[in-house]
Image (cartoon, rainbow, N blue to C red):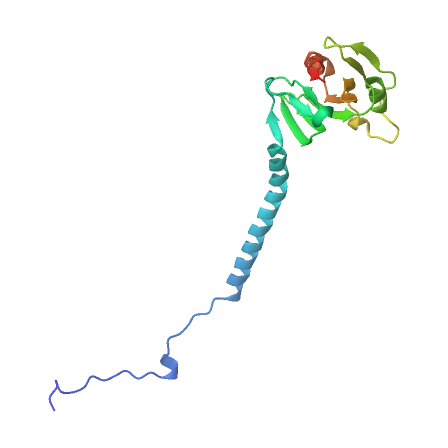
Length: 195
């Protein structure tokens, strides 16, 4: 036989020569699982911190004197002209939270079924000072007296009720560390009430 006629030898496979699969060590899978769980926990914490603030921002708008804040609906609605640039947060249509652009004063605004003097007394003002605004509406205002069971930090610096509007009054609860600085701005806000 010549060399060209000879068949090429075929390699034989034995049990030991089968292709080998390398197994991933258990500790790599453990590290991967810990990493995935850590990423999931981080995402949940960020979501818990960011989602409430994002939802609050969806309800917040920048005020314009050309589009007044409307509290209530239908014949019991009241308009409040809020100065330009102030922030208005509306949890519902009978309540609003108004904040100055610098964040130094926050005003919680609610509709009330009582007359201004009664609404101010109900809000904690012992002896409200009653005045007539330039708009012809009545304003009853004063500093609320802290109650024995309440936290003094939760007591507003001033409460003012303006009316008669919508069969009652509109109550402004003012929170600020420097009331004297914001009195002119608050006066403008009270004068902006339109029945």
